[in-house]
Length: 340
Image 1 (cartoon, helix red, strand yellow):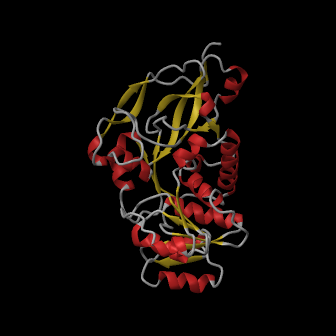
Image 2 (cartoon, helix red, strand yellow):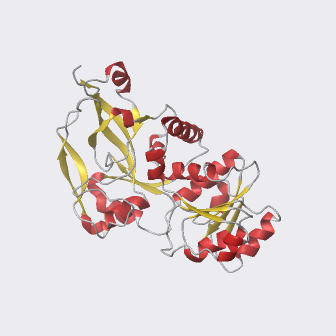
Image 3 (cartoon, rainbow, N blue to C red):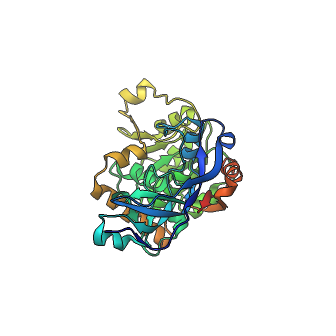
């Protein structure tokens, strides 16, 4: 079978290059790379939207759990459109032409064009906004796994989390509300209560010395069995103290740059368990039915508007440094995306 094209791409692709690790604004360069024809089993993709995630910034700094070989094109997620298919894909490949798909892990989404293995693609259903689809693979997927994979939550149960204003935190609020669970949401600054309640938060509290007693007053005897930690240090300890007997504290981030401290008493007398979660590991180990089920849920919620990530700005790849500077600002009200 010859390569079939939906539209002809240029011979060069705009791309953001990472040649060394360091301060994000100092290590990225914008240039061009050749556009290769898709090989057997591959498709050629045009990037539509790709977000700038905290994980992306950690990669640029050389501080992420796994780092790419250099030089590389960064970008851990996004959505693209299939322009052409390579040999060997048959009718299935023809059906992909023109479809929008989630960009696979390792694609390097901060580029205009690139090739990918067709078996790694996830087709985006009609009705899902492409900007939202571009942001589903990391934060919402993490939130859904955190809520479903550690504790078998019953309708009406409480979940407590810190970093509630983060991308994962907001997804936790929306997914929990859609699933019939209640959320206690801890933030580090004031002025966020109305916004988080508008997306489904049941309670919003500022971190502080009275946090544990405040949560106890709200929940009464219904102590949460699941705590979600993305901060560490004193914040994680406060969450652990609020948990019910045999509760589980799941750590998925370390924004506070402080280690997790678990007193012996919580382990001995309350049997509180400390677990960790990394969505990249989940994708590596999950079965295809598990991945299909996850995306079916996320696409449904994104199409219906139940799951929505605000977008603050969209930049072209040519404006990479401006986009990164924007993404690194504190107090943003939404994500920063690249447009292919």
